[in-house]
Amino acid sequence: MSVPIRPLHPVFAGEISGIDCRKPLRADEVAAIEAGMNHYAVLVFRDQNLTDQEQIAFTRHFGELENYNTAGHVRKREDQRLGSGIADFSNLDKNGEIMSGDDRVWFFKLGDRLWHSDSSFRPIPAKYSLLSARVLPSWGANTEFADMRAAYDALDERTKAEVEELICEHSLIYSREAIGFTDLTPEEIAAFRPVRQRLVRTHPASGRKSLFLSSHAGAIVGWTIPEARMFLRDLTERATAPMFVYSHAWRPHDLVMWDNRSTMHRARRFDRAEIRDVRRTTLAGDAPTVQQEALPPTQPAPMRNAAAHIAQ
Ligand code: MN
Image (cartoon, rainbow, N blue to C red; front, side, top):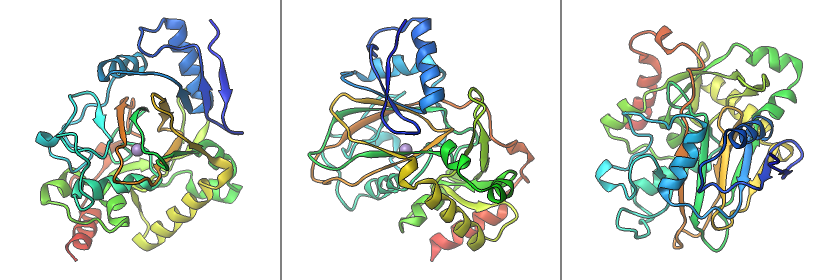
């Protein structure tokens, strides 16, 4: 069947048509969408008025949902507004009220405005994320995406050789520390302990290499922290130059699906007094980017650094 995709940017991102995400997909439709994802890395589905259950069912055509014992946020379980299988990325509390500007959940959410790849702080980072726009504020709130394959391709040969075998350490502690949010409980610090990820990944389907950058990355194995942070900051700046970035202006009922293995993204500012109700389903990745069991049993250095910093 024909599943037309209209390019939205010179190097990646496309708008797909001819798919009703509320209905079960045929195998050829799933294959066409997967092929589109392997090429475009970000696909926009317009006019998809989904319930949470429909979003979950659509997502499961492409793999298993992420399912972890540790939270990827500071919102307590009893304060969750939505059921399981779908994550609340709104600025609403469990009663549907706009959360306070000094709510620590809001502080934590602000960290999503840094460039990142979803779940890069987990031992097995995410495959796809799917974000559904239910209610949108009157201005702002774009989501920007950056193509980490094109960014890798554009590196000079010397830098490509330098990054090839590097291993980074990723943690939510690092990305939240970057915006001055250090108010974490000992339980949160334990849940957010760093994991290791390759800096250069090869996509299992397309075979393309990409930079696995994320604001969660706060250390490089074998490097000092300042040297690592400056290098990662420099690489991120180069990788998010306008030629690699697509900025998505949301319309109600847009569903945007992106491949976390080959892109970064960030949320953009909006009026906090207005409702932004967006909901995310996330697909689990297949494997760690490095063998986590090769880690020393206690990872003392990054934990001590992060904890010491937070205590200051
Ligand atoms: Mn995200």
